[in-house]
Image 1 (cartoon, helix red, strand yellow):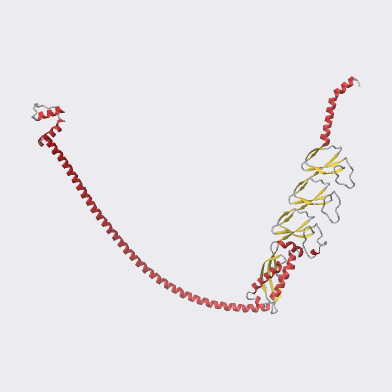
Image 2 (cartoon, rainbow, N blue to C red):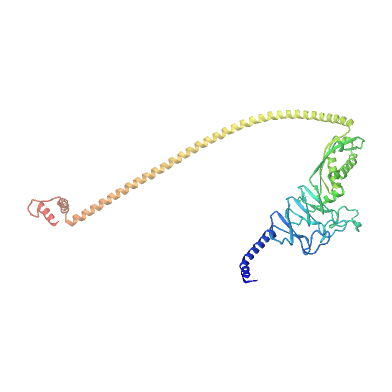
Length: 488
């Protein structure tokens, strides 16, 4: 290799590497990529490894063939030269349904067995409830069944379809109708109302009604018997009954459905009792009297005692009609009608007497009412007179009391006026005495009364004189006034 070739190889190396990387990336992305959508799963098939045994459906991880594990939703990368794959839809169990899984791979089950065990083919005991499941369709088959629904007023009797044979080596169970746990047959367990997801290959459920049922004993189903005196009598009525929950499983398996229970338990005992009890009375007893009610009560009690042992509850028995033979019923009815007519006449006579007595009592009542009204009016007049006199007496007493109070008030007023006048006279007298005392004292101070009077005259007039024209002789009036002005 010359130098130029080496240089050319070195120059092309990055390009070759880039091309190789692109080719490898494209191979991985487009050839190895597995895109599993949300509503599907991918089943892998291995192309390399050990060759599985003939007839193998699911290979082990080190063998060629279909693998058990599947790919869920997502993106995966597998070498297409080593693996192959296929897309399959997931299993969606709708509400109200269940899925039973059949395993297709494994060893065969022993003869007579259908439920798969570890490593065997067959039906898996566990069921699939509503939801989405990714299970390899080559390894498992899923069958859908409706869920078991027990309605209100019912119970579910369970029948085990798998388990040990109850007769194998157990002679004690030969004459029983229910089985123990782990055995085939009708179990004593019952289901309450609701929905249950049970494997139909393992457990069968029989809905049994616990509600009241009515049977009309009429027509061909009426009860006929002969009375003590040899007359045929027909009884028609209604029987209401229901099954006991704790004995529903045994009863339905031992006897049958409700129609079988009616025909095998209730009706035979009703007819048997009616014929025995009915033959104890005469035909007349079933036409008049209280025989019908007594017969009904005894029939109901007898059915309760006899059917209760089987788990059948008798809730009511109603005898609607007891029909005696026509040849005696007409005669007895006429005689009974005559008795009733006579009784009616007696009642009419009694009613007429009652009306007469009522009229008499009504007249006495009217008379007594008038007497009572008169006495009432008299009593009212007396009460009104007494009330009027009392009112007038009360008014007079009130006027007297008012006059007495007014007199007392006048006397008190006169006393007050006299006291006021006396007080005022005393005050005037005291004022006069006071003034006279003051004057006497002043007069004594001036020597004589004339001197004090002269002083007062001068004092009163001096303030009003502005000028005096007189001589200044103090002995004169003018001189005195002048002197007084000068002093001021």
